[in-house]
Image (cartoon, rainbow, N blue to C red):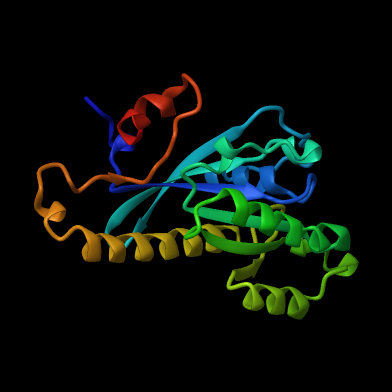
Length: 216
């Protein structure tokens, strides 16, 4: 018997990308566990965590993947992007070079991820406003030009972290549910069709892989 934790209507894979040190791991831990580690070091290997939210009365389970240090070696593989329906492209507002590299990350995302992936540009470490190197208006203009949503966050003090994930998951849900209405009018009435996992590939033998066997 599954526990209440196993019950969800949609399963969305969201990836975090951006330069090393911009705070991707802390965004992940703040959203999924409400934790922040000032001493956090680059994780080795792919890391992901899950959290469920409610949107329009539906349970959306987000499986959020972190590049976990691979970005240092530009060795992020196709498997990392495979099945992702959303991406948070993160830079550090206090380090302009991390913002300059956003363009390269965006190109990599466009090259390797699904063409319909929902992308949000995230200026993290907004608590370092006294060290700001990237003007908000400049980043906002870049996001608009490239059809990205945009938000500034702080994993340290929790500012906008919840909002960022809620917004991108809601946007994905709206796109997916509209597509299902257009593409699968009959499928909605078929037995067991209320649960619609979205292309998530389990990574290893942990508890999540057991839950996600249906998704391959």
